Image (cartoon, rainbow, N blue to C red; front, side):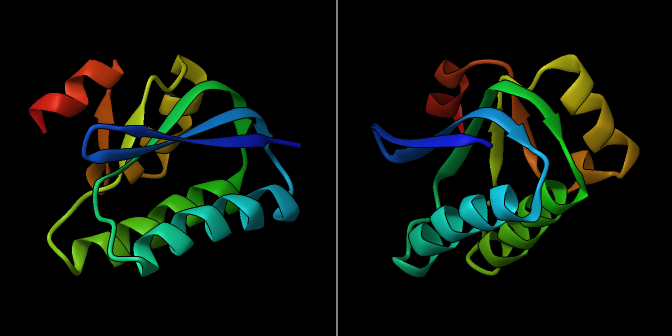
Length: 111
């Protein structure tokens, strides 16, 4: 099960995820956090994936849905510090064409 922590970083909301996003329940928790922020009108949302070893299709689907909502207000979901295995999986399903990847949180200041 994944642990989610919200951090305010300047104009950004950073959701730190630790653990695996493997089950429907994990994805549902992540979706609830992201969509609650989006419903508040927050559009600068980043997800720190440095603590994620595995992400399943339901988690990838949550990122795609969040990106779809954010694109309506001209924004993009930013995935920060994704491990190589996780990032490679997202590239296989072409999620890298929808979201922005950042190697560090400091890159958020330039977006």
